[in-house]
Amino acid sequence: MLKYATEDLKSFYLEAAVAQPGRQADSAELDNWFWDEKTASAVLCALCPILMESGDEYNAKVGNRTLIPAAQRERKAAALYISDAAANKFSRQLP
Image (cartoon, rainbow, N blue to C red; front, side, top):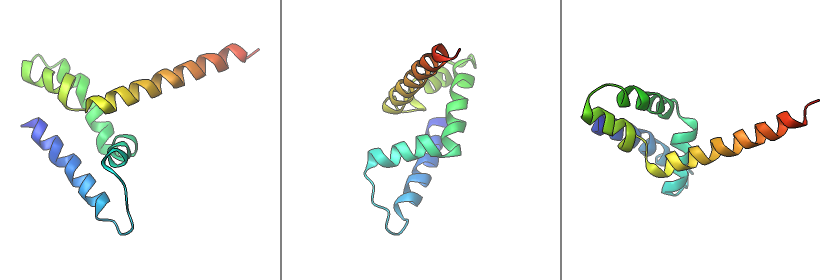
């Protein structure tokens, strides 16, 4: 049930974005917009570890595998890796 509710939430956001006059974006751009800029995506990201630690097998699977699309997980992980590497490089340059 939770998975369906989150899919409905994402659909609401994406349909609203598409309905804006003059907005032309492909599905990847819309997905990135949702996962990068919307508070709802931050809530879903915060929900993942809670579900994984819930003790319920179904909720753990939803939190671990299906709540956030794999492409977005990989994209976010790559961005975190790059920003961590940049931060480490910057900190080594400090006196």
